[in-house]
Image (cartoon, rainbow, N blue to C red; front, side):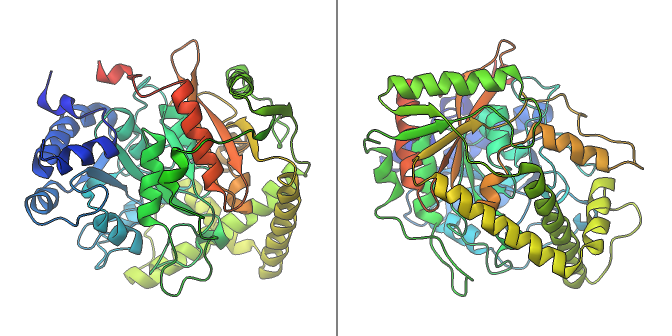
Length: 477
């Protein structure tokens, strides 16, 4: 067994405890993680910007006495600025962009004692639920390297699933934490809107659709990390309701008897793959066996109408984002620097009228209230995370002159996760089920706005009832 394998599948909480007890040094953890990245990343293509010397210097210096002091970590190459290190957002257009300051989230990660080893792969500007940018090439799913690890936090997911690090940064504008968590067999929580800060560079990205957090191996790591990073930043336009107590305490608490509604029907009307439906039905039985009150139900809304409004807001946001990058970099993208689907969404966004944007946002807010009323009766809503198991790489490719075909393919793959981005509700993908091909199939649990506490209690109960931490993808064999 390689030395790096001693630590590979311990969670971040356990590694931090080893450092506290002086049984291992931060530098030893960093060197072990680097060795494992160097060994497995040629297969995975998860890490695209190594930061090894910065990590070694941090590990050898004086680290903050935070909850994860000395634990290796990876940043997704999107939204999170790290001073002096390039942030490409998966785009050739930004291949040379180097921010001169840290994002507030990165500052909080550092204060928690985490040591950043590098940046992980992402689709261009995080626009797709797969991780196959032209700039860096595809990240491969460690459970089957011919398949997608999901997106847009697919590089982070592949890294955690193979033990390169115990947890890694992700962000989620339509499912980009939960989708790769499902594809790679991890725990992935999207927090309540504005739970984590986006400043100083962003206020509410895409009108509040985007949330920051991480992909983790354990529920307790997700909770403890959220304790370390959450809370408003100076000048935030709004923030999430403060929790009653630390999230880590919720992991140790009894969830009580919850009212859980479940459905396997896509709100967009597309068929859901039998494996994904089976995962939900299995999870419903598991919850009932744990004493939860479970019944089949779903909020009623016009999914196609909402998707169309969301697409308009999203495409307008893409166009505005590119305009802001032009101001930041001082140059427009050269011909061919943007991928066809990015160019298409940008052009679509420029056609979107301001009045249509406001009307679309009003529709989403009205439907969010309707869905909120559903949670007056139920504590949790259980759905498939995805409409299909992890797809073969290349499944989202389209002819260059028909990029809209990619967006149609997206609709069948991710019919559920995007709902929580416009409602702002917290949601988690939990790795409870593997199909006959040995592929992980996540189950998706949605909580009330501001109520990560219930999800952490339930997640910990599910983790104890059906542990997943000992499962190893074939790449690790």
